[in-house]
Image (cartoon, rainbow over all chains, first blue to last red; front, side, top):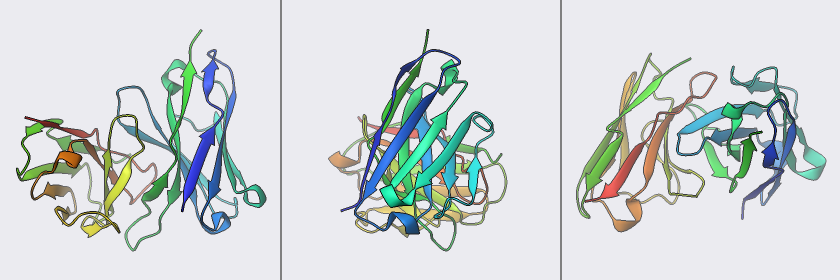
Length: 121
Length: 107
């Protein structure tokens, strides 16, 4: 059974940093691209970043570029999101999700339960 | 960035109703579109990819259609388990933007 379990969320002051983790099981983690997607309270989904199987390539949304860094450790079946210079508008549930390759694009077929990040003084 | 506009944003329907949700893209995206279902406090669930391909395990009452800039998600006969929020996502370019969502509630 595929499982994705996020951790690391919490309350942080504006300008602060936080590192999210996601541990994967039930599939060959090193064979899959992985993503982070977030959802602000009461709002829609917002794609954040994704990373290639071997970590050699990544993509970011403009609203986090330069502040967030996605990484992975395939030996530990783990995905990370280092978040720096946090702003109030980064407050959201952050989901780890597996990229699913299809003929027309790469949706996310498995998602974790999410971890809440609250940026507030 | 490609913008996705969903309509309606809110829909009230009864069990057994046929429901159609529309997703319009700001530019052509061929069939690079997915649909998700999300229930309160839960992670999204992939329903459809490639605009019309049902994900494994998803009931056949769900269907998707469209290409280019206009897409639809149809639930042929709404069931109690289907009351949720539905959103589309474009997959042709980064960032992989989502639509604003359509909340389907019980009439």
